[in-house]
Image (cartoon, rainbow, N blue to C red; front, side, top):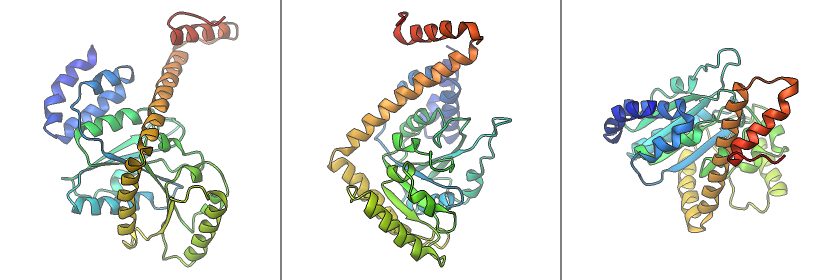
Amino acid sequence: MFWEKKFNDIIESFKNKNKYALAKMITLVENNPDDAWKIISKLPKNKSPHIIGITGSPGAGKSTMVSKLVEKYSEKNQKIGIIAVDPSSPFTGGAFLGDRIRMRTLNPENVYIRSVASRGSVGGLCDSIFDIVDVMSSYGFDKIIIETVGAGQSEIEVVYVADTILLVMSPDSGDEVQMFKAGIMEIADSYIVNKIDLQSANRFLTQLKNTLNLEYEEKHLRKIFGISAIMNKGLDEVIDWIDKHKQNLYKTNEIEDRIKRRKVRRTRSNIIRKLDYTIKDYKIEEENLFELKDNLIKKLTGGKSND
């Protein structure tokens, strides 16, 4: 197989913690989605890192908060992998990948940043996200932080990938409206109100607490924090809570439910991606739509059609 030669060329460097080999291994699974699992199955097994998803609307300060959190983790000598998802251009398919620029002051010894383009995937992530996380887990990070695109209310796919989800909000970005909508508000384990130094912050926090008490009383473990990432305020409390949340996930066995949810979504994602590729390669005409549907069903059922 074509990927095997590339794999054999980089696997020893990957095992020796070479970050260039890590980057190449991630590219290998991105470019070979049909064989990604075969590649991953050949990688070393490591302890499971804590996977932290950080989502929220554009301008809320997600990248700044990630940068400050990682600085603190790095001071504790923890190894951190960051997956920063950027929106793709609808014209070229490329992405600006600006998160890597904003985080360039982070300690390169302890931190690896992978910027990826969403490439049209909906939900704030990219199609290869599960495979990328597996490769980074094998590399041996203590924590993997996923920062989503920042597109808005429908950006909920991170709930199927991460163990712990933080929703970053800002008093000055219209997030008051988001509070009253379903979707992204429901997936968060913790709500982080950034830019707490703004005059409107206290009113925003009160409004958020009232909304959550009314709508999500059953989720009493969810926490609200007021921070200023740029002024380094409130982040130690967030870090303490993140660690306690992980401990609670294992103590209550909720981590098993989240892992099961992840596996189901990954299977669904793989099937849909395969179908998308098949449909793109098919010459679609009005008269062969039924034939297309029949062929797709045969692919899924091993040659049998429902009709």
